[in-house]
Image (cartoon, helix red, strand yellow):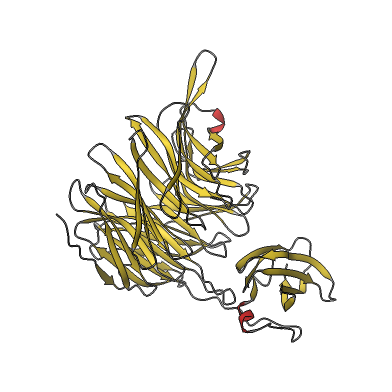
Length: 570
């Protein structure tokens, strides 16, 4: 019986790391070495700057345990714990998440026996003490699996995955648990073909509505016969009680029989619109697919990105920036027998703003697997690069700026010069609004049968002190010093984002004035909760020149007033 487990880490300096443009620093590399084959599952950050990694450690052919390891921002391992299910079989982590209180959640699959598996969700507090572990089994005792997890502000946990009813009979599975680990509801979806249906990702809105996407075998039913539509990208909305609200099946305009369409990733914008990214393969080769639905399930648009080589392209992840733009990350085939890391940006109307790719070499296979955004709309895509049959794969992480240029690329080859594949990324934004510190990027994946976490930092972007028109900075008391407001970029060409941090609930009004003091635009005017917020300002038809914005934060009848300069340029 297994009783003892030793956690250890190996620290490496800059090992075969290649960067373009000296805008990124590899701060540290940590290798987690367990007593067996270590597999990665995911990475997450908390509000205290800690990083958590999870996966499973294989002890043998049929046994494995779930590990959770914590590093602080300096790379010091400050915790490590194992989970072995009561079945003492093969336990596999699949997803990780943190909440605002510093709790950590791990979701995975546990093998009951050689033919059945259940879903497990484990909650740890900020001290990495296990609070509970819930094992969920569908009432029909199917094989249950999980692919994605989300946690809302109340500590409710949402899962998306599949149940296996037979050799070619899978259904979507969506599960909700409360903060105590009690299963509140589960819902399944069986597609029109009664075939293989697998949910890959999910998103949750502020009202507790749940949106899942994935791939579903489809059949179009005719009067006298049925036509197979292959696999469709299917997106479903459930309300907070798990009642299905709508189902949208996307098949490439039904123009191709047996086409392959799938939703890999899903995201919501501030208005509750639903965006899905994945692929469509109408003619055999895959193209990047991006879909938009309204919150009520009304189809808005579909955009298909087909690279210049007309070969395989796929979107693996999707994210929405604070301006409502849609960014997808993945890969594109370059027609030379290799592929490049890809990022594409659309506005909310589906108009492509740019498409950018990166190759590590003329004959390399470069694939983007995971993506994260920072507060300024820069996209970070991580994955792998290799030369098939010649060079084993290495980590590859690429920064695409908000304008579509490649900011930097970093490559990591472990000391064994074996297979290294980055599979997860965590982009940690600075909480200091006034200093505009650049995001810190953590990547995590497998390296020669162990797992490696890397921290990348970027130089700080600190703007000159703000210009005040008059000494009207009127703090109420010492607590009001937490009030901050800033806009970036400044000077402004087309738009700028205003960031403001409130020490308490209250009303804020931000107004823009010309050189004569006339009000030309109201940027924000309403009640906001304590904390950090952002608001987008569009230049529209304002002419170039000097302007000033005045912010008035009101609470308990008292005001804090700030006035700063804003420049608009052509």
